[in-house]
Image (cartoon, rainbow, N blue to C red; front, top):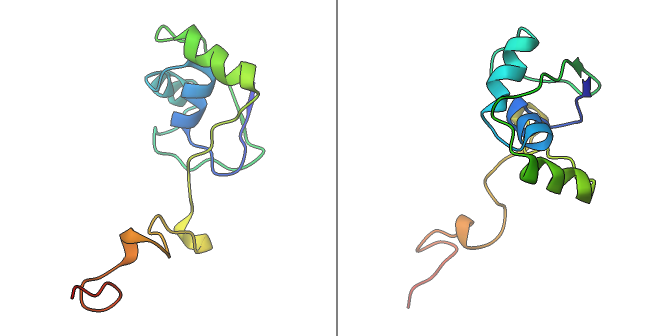
Length: 98
């Protein structure tokens, strides 16, 4: 059984538990979900064993005691666009070429 943490997706769970993103399809099927389904913190999911398991990658994350959670929620005001740095500069306004 897998307990979902905040901002976690099926892809995150697949990489963490099976070391391969392809395992997300098996996890989605086992839980009657779409591969892009929004997960909720505390949600319980069945953890099927995967034919796509990469034990080396899965053991790396488990050994480091790191959980993967790469998601973000636009509704909560989160954005993938940085507020500072090169990615936000515009020629002639915030980046002057002289």
